[in-house]
Image 1 (tube, helix red, strand yellow):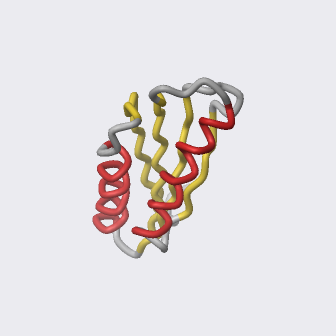
Image 2 (cartoon, rainbow, N blue to C red; image 1 turned 90 degrees about the vertical axis):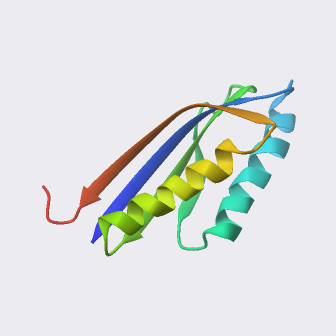
Length: 99
């Protein structure tokens, strides 16, 4: 079994408050959950900054290829949104046999 972790560092567009930030981040998270119901997704960083956010996505799969493919698809989905700029994306793949 493989576990994939994807961390996305995102710069938000014209956002001037934490309330506006939530109105941008919530639909992104909801769309990932809708398109990929088997993944876990949440805002994981930059919680007190109104123009930045970090979104974490976790994937569990029987194969490394499927795990990586789902993470790539999630990254493309988020990066394609016009209201944000993807600053960085980090993928990690863990095998249950590793210590």
